[in-house]
Image 1: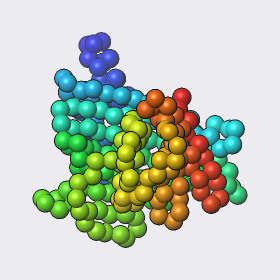
Image 2 (image 1 turned 60 degrees about the vertical axis):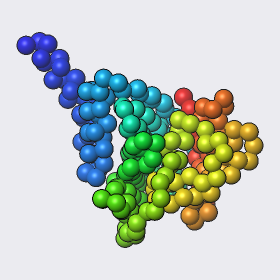
Image 3 (image 1 turned 180 degrees about the horizontal axis):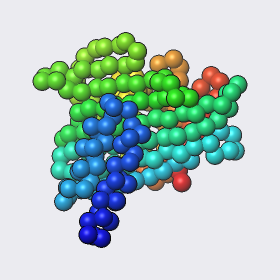
Length: 218
């Protein structure tokens, strides 16, 4: 009985993050969890980044990549608190799945002070790839996708000219400005700069109109 209690308790602890996720993202999280529990050939990587505003650590990003057979699944969660006029509590979740090296589905969700700010969803239906971006953009995605922002957390995008950004579900221009340094420009002139050392991501600089943040590898 004690053994069963320990197993049940461990399973409950593993499932507890599920209650924190938006409903749309729970299937992706469950799929990732089951793959990690049941897959005999799973290769997993985890990394974390501090979120800095100026010199202050204001949050954390956790990122994981799991490979099982022909499937690669990425899961990123973040939490941060900082002041812009008043206190901002920002939470985000992103799940991305590749099959045979191409993007199969992705979901993102970001809330500010408990209110949904942005979300997106992409999934395949028969031979079509359906996209939705909050609040009312619906369209079809053409062609295969090999590079997304999720992949950039674990690999340097050498020779890539564009990156598919999950939050907007569009290809956005990527420019190599120096060895190991890349600038990604998104709609609305939002810019993220990625810095790599020996192929490993070290920092992401997030430049916005009213604030700048740095995600620094722990």
